[in-house]
Amino acid sequence: MSHVLTASLVAIDRARDFAERFALDMAETHKQSFVQRMRERYGYRVPVRREEWLPYDLAELIADYVRALEKLRQQVLQAEWIGEESKKLVPDQPLLPQIENITARYGADLSRRIYARLEHRRQQTEGVTHYIWGTEGDDRVRDSHAANEGHIFAWDNPPATGHPGEASNCRCSASPVKLPDDPPIEPVYPIESIIL
Image (cartoon, rainbow, N blue to C red):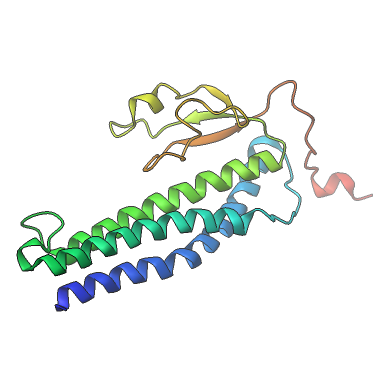
């Protein structure tokens, strides 16, 4: 096995090993951000809750990522058996930079999908029933997602495109929106108002 092939397989393995730690760190970071955003925008204090769904959702997303990495690993190994000239996934480009580029893209997509899932679950847990679709507003936004920009959707009735962040490489966001018929939320009171 060549040095380049070995390095490529190691890069794939590192990406897989990194995913679980990254997902857990991201879940904690998102939680802090979510709590702060709900407080600042809506005056809502997010209570501490056990998120029993969290390990299952993260495991599902990581499993999809690992399947993609395993597919990539098989492509690399198959190319090795075919011979030196066929080793490249893209002709006339070195293998290792291609693998590093692909694993980075897979990692970025995993990051976006984790964020979208956490946002979805945590909004619903807090009683948020609807969101406003947001895009990055650049030329990389899919036409179907650009058409959703600024529209309000229900979490329990996704648009034909799916919810923001569900599609591969989707960078869209879901900002919580409070509708008039939603149940009231617990307000946050300044500490001074409750001290006698």
